[in-house]
Image 1 (cartoon, rainbow, N blue to C red):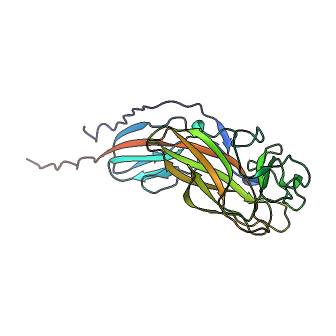
Image 2 (cartoon, one colour):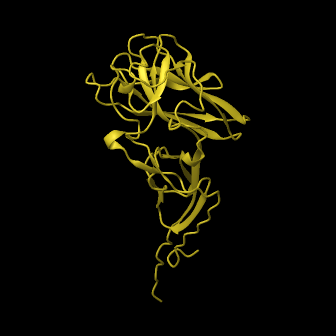
Image 3 (cartoon, rainbow, N blue to C red):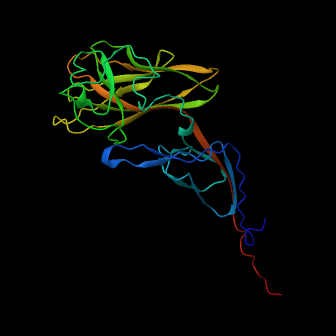
Length: 286
């Protein structure tokens, strides 16, 4: 290849195509849209005359991760090699009713369900599904679900002072030898003793503890935060995924959760070849 004459880009893509959709991933007034990945497990071959190349991940994703450690949409590389970026393949979310739009269905809890009504969550170790925590306890904060939807549901919990109790659990099918991301949005609903929880897979703790933050004493807004953990399925074809309360405080220990996702990692590759231009020839007079 004579780089001074030709600079070519060769692109080959393989993998399965997914429908591109929009999904809320932000909170309240600071919400933002994220696009689901259009393709997963693709390889783009780049062969060009240059000392560097800019690699662009698909726009609009959340939680970009590159094998270089970068977390931006694009990176600049200065050497030939294989590079990849990854995000969550939300098109293949394994959780049923993760946004609680269908109410108290498709999951189990070791807490007691309370039909939504004023004061329904006075007792500890109870939960409900509602559009606003204030609707089920007069001392809880008032706010909308994680997406800011006025009619969107969330799971609201009055925690009990007993550690190791599963507040949400679901059995799902998984593909063997696949990396998955377990993702949940949480917020406290009362200022005192914010929740302490952990992810669970097959009744074993997974990842770092989930430490919720306090909310203002004015009780006029949430503090939705996203917590995630990564898990490889190994030889498994199914899994029991759960969220476990570890807080032993009786006062406070009240929280909400929303938009639960358990989805495979979407990874796309760039195979980059950088070719230097040849040095200018030296003309020697005869």
